Length: 167
Image (tube, rainbow, N blue to C red; front, side, top):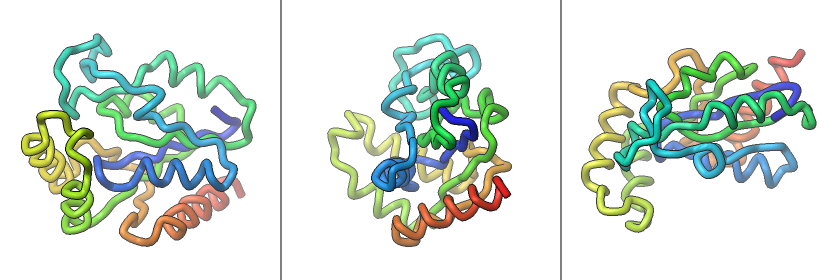
């Protein structure tokens, strides 16, 4: 990962993937955790599971540890949502929780291509909205980031926070 490591978390549909891509575009070391580290497993034990639901979307702990131990980059951002994030929050120098209002979330979820949902679109959509309303599954002590703003502003806000944390 980096000398300093930051987690960009949030519920599904809040913009974590877009933030990661924008950080990469700007030349920052950013890892799409949902693509590189994720698998379906039990959030408590880490055992692989065949339950294809968001509550079983977790990150591989050994892979996270390996990334954190790599100090090649000055700063690394790990972006994505993991139901086991509480197991590795302590490895981060800071956590950013991207948040949106319910209307924005609903519009983003409705705009997702059906192939991203598999056959579970209505059930997963309902769960994501419920998690949004209850804040279930998102880190409770992260720095909130308003992800309803244009993407460039969202990333600027995160980078301002990182700069303030390193001063």
